[in-house]
Amino acid sequence: MSLLPHLVNGLALGLLFALLALGFMLILGLMEQINLAHGSLFALGAYFSFAIATPRLPLPPDLLHAWAAVPLGWRFTAAIFLAPVLVAPFGVVIERLMRRTYGRDPLYGLLLTFGAAMVIEDLIRIVWGTRDYMLPVPRGISGGFLMLDLIWSTYRFWAAGFAVIAMAVVWLVIERTRFGALVKAGAHDSEIVQALGHDLEKLRVWVFVLGTMMAAIAGVILAPIWGIRPHMGVDAVIPAFVIIVLGGVGSFWGAVLGGLLVGMVVGLSGAYASEWSMLSMYLLLILVVTFRARGLFGKKSVLEA
Amino acid sequence: MRSGHRVPTLTPAMIAIWAAFATVPLWIEHIGLYQYLGVEILIFATYALAYNLVLGHSGLPSFGHGAFFGLGAYGFGLAQFHLVADLWFCLGAAVAAAALGGAIVAAFISHRRGIYYSLLTIAFGQVFWFIAIKSHAITGGEDGLLKIARLPARLGVVSFDLTHNISLFYFVLAVFVAVSLLLWRLVHSPFGRVLKAIKQNETRARFVGYDVWRYKAAVLVLSAGLSGLAGGLFAMAQSSAFPDVMSLHYSGYIVMMTLVGGGLVTFWGPVLGAIVFLLARDVIGAFTTGWMLWFGMLFVALVVYRPEGLGGLFLRPARAKPAAAK
Image 1 (cartoon, each protein chain N blue to C red):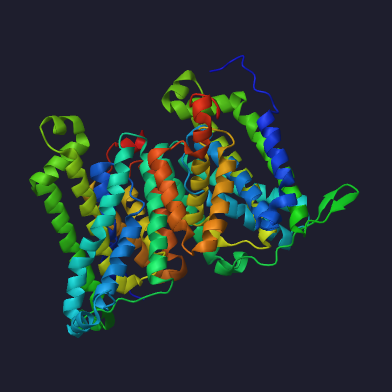
Image 2 (spheres, helix red, strand yellow; image 1 turned 90 degrees about the vertical axis):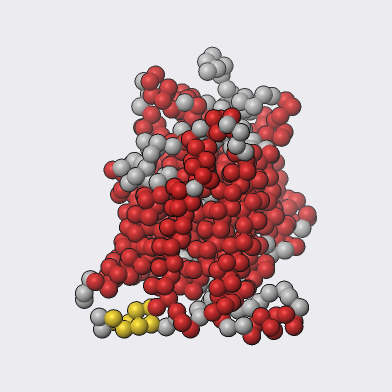
């Protein structure tokens, strides 16, 4: 059996994992808060996109019929843009509550978001039930193609490409805009930034909203691959945190590399022992963190206090 | 440090709590609940007390304790099936399995603290959970180990049958009494004082000359072992062992119970938390399937407004915060 297909699949999977971890990384890196609700926001993104694309919206019947007549390609595109906007208010509420834990032990943020994750998960169960759904993919990017005598999933490659674009956008926002500079400065020394007359509270809300929307976008993009079910949130938040701890807290490239490594390891171990492939990422994490306490590119952070 | 201030082995509060539990089977059915709930509450109260040894008393926020509870449950079941079907032996196996798991985890993470401690315990918890799900041949996979017997408690010539919920309740109560007494003594011993010092300032504790790593490892092993004991009892109560209890959800639930009850500020907080959690599950669950929606909101509100938990509400007027738990 040739190794190449597994490497390519691992790479594609790694890009998707990096996309999944991106929002988690933003909030942790720029606000020093662990957002355990990240996975639930991811799940909400998937559910909202499902509601928009299939379409199952609480709209008047005429309007719904008209929307259902629109080609799936448009509905899918609308889902990618609209679902994150619909999920954003959940992030705002969590940030509001979290505000009271700033300056306290970061454990409280973790506990709070765990509670929020439980609430959102049950909310999903109440609204959509416990069954699985599948988000349909427009015909242009569904199906498969032949390469090297193997069949490849078109959507996976399309999604991986989308992940690269999303990462580039986030990188530009953090590294090349005034907003990014202010937020990073605020994480570094909040007093100076406030003394200079910037509204740090507002900045934090925007960071959280950005992180929330990234989670939701990841949810939309990954929904056709992983499926939509109530506990998908918990299934997603754990790889996200594994990737961040592996890559090093607060490092953008650490998150990307962490995602790629996890994708590779899961992809390759999946080739030989598919049952156990998800275990490999924890073993990788434990191995790396045993020798490099702060992960690959980690800096000292408040989390070690 | 309150040197010279001796803490009595038995306190009125302790005896009152034990006595109150002892009356539960007499009235629990009259208020519309059922005997098995009492058993479950006592098991989770024992588990929460054991968990609070790391969270409340040592300041180590483990988020993967479900693994130890689950190891105890599987240890109990597997010992019964493959070794000796004796209650004491199987409970011993439950403790040993969980303590061994705790020792493995401790070896990797005892130099960590704070959030990194949480994150790594999550990772280890997932490893154990994953192994439990995938080892079909040993653990029964997602179906779990079924048909675990409620073994009789043999004490020399007499033997107590524990197949009924009421007799099981009193057996679990005896274990709860023993565990709470042990933990009470432990946290007020010199060992407990060192844990408290580590909680307050690890670096300082190290500079004073304590081998912090050993204390942190020891307390995790101990807490894991006692959590495993609770897990063994749970396997017996449920007549089965499932991988679910090892999941991140369940590991989070025990943190919720401990925190909601006020484990950070009082010794008995986790017990209160276990009662509130399981009652909420049954009472709210009777009205809606999404009980965690409401309990989760209560939990979030507590974290935001009253991180010292329900126990803290009662203590608040009487004593200043640091007094009770330590």
